[in-house]
Image 1: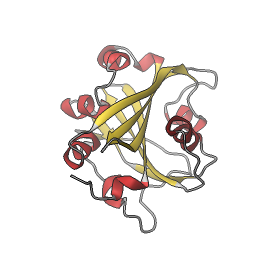
Image 2 (image 1 turned 135 degrees about the vertical axis):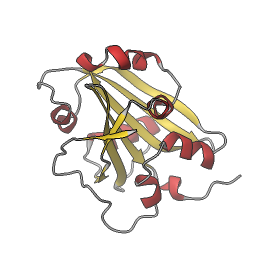
Image 3 (image 1 turned 90 degrees about the vertical axis):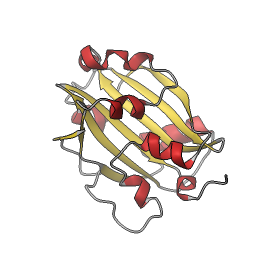
Length: 184
């Protein structure tokens, strides 16, 4: 897998700032799916929502989309030990949901990471990090889907994946429980 160039808004950082027990998870360059499967033998993908909608402003800018454009947005919870571990949010423009990425609308409960890391032609951009405040749309989406309220900031990372000129933005929000050893 190769790297792709991208630019980020000022809220996302190129490095994890401060101490967090999630650092090894956040900085994982390989497949997060593979790591979660190793940590949690009962790993599962729970599809929360998918469909056409307006991406968040920072996502729209990164994907170079006009303001009124809708994109395919998929939100899933990556589960381990029957509990949410990571909230994953992927965005792909309509124009990029053709050709090589055309099957992404139909992957269902298949982990997106399994498809991305299985293809050597896919290029991954740099990882960027952010502690999401409760006001951030992805923090709110996580709370809505998990039926929880928390004022705790949540660590997230994101990167662009490219296959030829088609772009896919993946953001992963890590729950604090992800850093705890699994109970096997």
